[in-house]
Length: 283
Ligand code: AMP
Image (tube, rainbow, N blue to C red; front, side, top):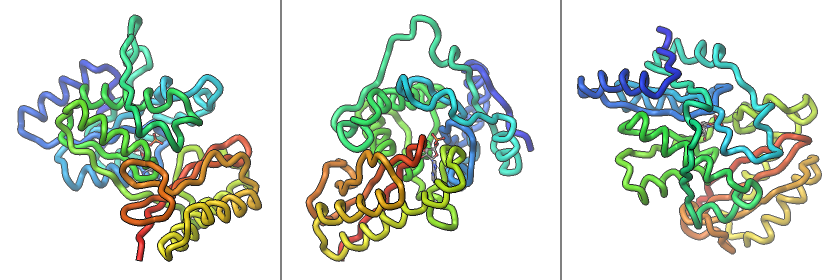
């Protein structure tokens, strides 16, 4: 069944009010569209726990920097709706930018600390844009649960923190990364890769796997990072924004993977920036 397409916050609220009155559990899956199986995994996770699932599709301008890929970010609402229809998604919320940011809009949610490392310094303002739009979506839908991919690990931690700090009554659920058969994490941005770049892109995951294995065996972060960066350079990644070993929750760099660590990377292939991360399980 085709999902209901909602463009206005008032229509969204009216639809949700009916479900809420019937006592139905509601799940929210925030996306920027150009949907792939990674997004669908979030939908499945929501449907496993919730009677109703809302997928938001909004390419949020405030999380893109001035010289970033906002204009060329892939958009295909009809294709997205066609992917969601067979799943029985109840509603797609696809607002215009003016609906989300009307004239006079002046409020921003910032999450300190967690946004100081990893992607933070490379994408100034990005996480404030994410935190603000996620706060708005949570207030618009007021879901019981909201679903986010582990692929964007830093984003997942930022959302967990903002929900905790602002006492938003929602359960944040992280969903494992869905990958192509060669290990490349699915991403809407993969559409931008040339054939040659696509062939090289899987190196990102291979480097993370080797790093996670070495770290789990007791190797020092500095050594693992140096080896990984060399392998990425050989595969044509340039620049490498970061390859880091961090505590999975605080996101602070750790000299060795003890406890709950995560190895995370962001690097460019041509004009496309790719990110990925993996858990490290120490012996
Ligand atoms: P995006 O449309 O890229 O903003 O992503 C929307 C949501 O889907 C975010 O919570 C992402 O972390 C998640 N997501 C994107 N790619 C994947 C993937 N390959 N596996 C799992 N979740 C993903």
